[in-house]
Length: 135
Image (cartoon, rainbow, N blue to C red; front, top):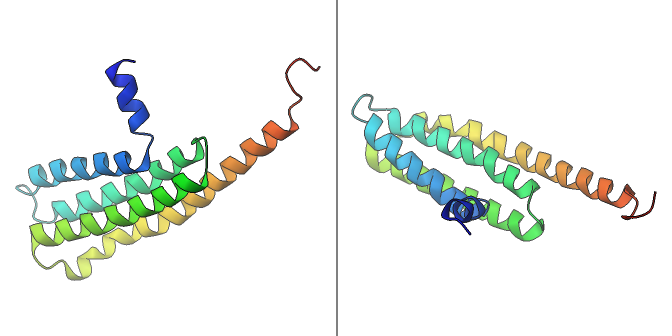
């Protein structure tokens, strides 16, 4: 198996996706902090929103549903807390500016419902399809 195939397969797991998003957030916020003091907060909101979309997308295509769902929920919560704490450490007291995280907080449940709907539709399609060899 080629290294890029392993990387792609690994990024389908919720924890590694969350870790990759957190590392990307750290890199962007450390570089952009010099240009704008509020950059870590905006980068953090973008990172959590990115995972709020990509986590459920990977969940919709996972072979099983419930275990990856719990893993996605735990990873999202851990990423949310880690990014908020990192922003607090980089900027000092964040206060009301933390409201930028509300977008991610609202996107995640909708994306999870969408992943569940996709799973249900795929399951029904497989159940309605005739077995191979029968026309």
